[in-house]
Amino acid sequence: MSNRQKFEQDLTVLLNMLTKDAELEVQSKLTVLKDWLIKLQRENVVKINHSVMELVCAKYLIQKGYDVQLEYPLNELLTCDLYAIKGLGNEIVEIETGFIPPENALAPLTYTSARLASKIIRYSSFAGKFTLVFRRITLCLFHGRSLSRRGTVKTGKLNRSNASLTPTIKSRL
Image 1 (cartoon, rainbow, N blue to C red):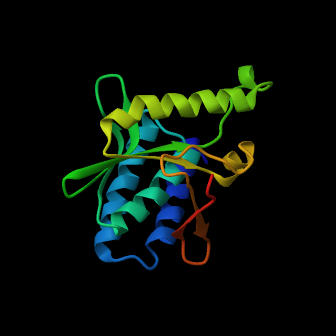
Image 2 (cartoon, rainbow, N blue to C red):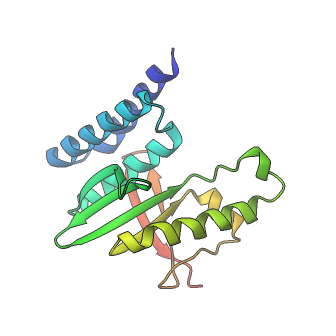
């Protein structure tokens, strides 16, 4: 099986999990986003780990009434992971998978901290709300602490039985 076929198969399995209990409108919107990600993967723009997190976050935002676009260009140089609009407001979501390139293997915390600071600086000026999404393992790098305007860390987990994103907001800094 080629990487392209595996990517499409993985997103189809994920979409089936995410839409198992979802309304028809949510299913339809997620299918459009999945197809967009498949197109981008063919152009070598996205990878599976990142795309999975994008679809999980998109489901959560769609269920909250947002219109969501993935890999949305903010200007000629900058593309955000998720761009969500609800009413007159917008939210930009940036996903951090925790990848650390080999040249930064000896200083992963420094690399990750600089990367997160860079994302905050670059993207927050385009958004009414700005959110960074981490895998739980990435949060471990910070000993349970993360950057937040309100002093909270937001985490979520995918429930395998019904593939729903259950957000939890905890950890006062």
